[in-house]
Image (cartoon, rainbow, N blue to C red; front, side, top):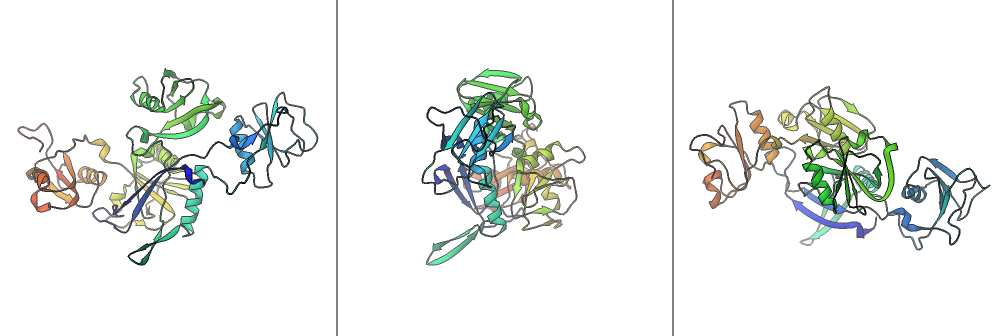
Length: 422
């Protein structure tokens, strides 16, 4: 892939380990913002003065190809032969040719056919689409070939990738953008439920989130028209015949993955549950878990080796103590976020006398899970302190000076007489 597609790289170390209340300081997380490759059609040109040509009988034909970009992508990705040109006919059939001209006897059964010739010189590598880049990364991790070494204090330190997560969201760090997944580009939908006039994609995403008449599940941002199309249906149930080619339109769906948190280390629960096959992305697996009717799905694994999605009625924290899980598998485990059911009050907390320390080196989701599952008493609230210094003693207590990621749970809640947050 082209390195100019890497828009940003963030490196963090000392992330939480597999088991809550531990820290794996040897693990490093690298987050990469990867732009999609340039459209394939930009590497093709139409013959000067001969744009409209019929295909030939020796050309490979593929039906139901409405978008010109899809036809160009098929030509560029053809593996059986070197595709040097293609014909796109009646916005529905794509013909791939091994020559720059019509190959074979001319086919005259279409109303309009446009001819495009490959026009990229000095090509040094194949610039894969993001999904194929991700597949190549997963294959390298599986075969233990994603590794490198760095010279540190005159010694070579070796690193090997153990997992890779692909978030198809405009920005996983943004509270609004993380709720959406890019489903398709260069297409729109013929009959949306609502059309709103907006300028930017950010405005369109906000309109969808704040829409009151129905829950907006799918949106289309049409940049040139300055329009935002809202749809109540999931993109997964929209018939593809409803899609209309449009070069400056982008389709987003509400993300299901945003409600789950990954547990790294190749974790796979040994408990049984529904299994879905031919699942090509973690987002799809998250959708199955959220919509499952046979069990109350609290967690899932997406296994990239077998393309399977395993659902569980158990949260990882339910089984972590008993060891009902495997490590170092070719699966990525996600458990539901339990902190979503609580209201957050930032930079303040219960007085230190009103709660008890439950975990260190934890996170908000694990802390919330401990509160909801506390067998000894009715937990009404929890406090999470990322650090504990002198200014924080009123909440975290002097005994925890210097500790990080502290989880406190308590039986008190806001609204009790004379109870105030510190």
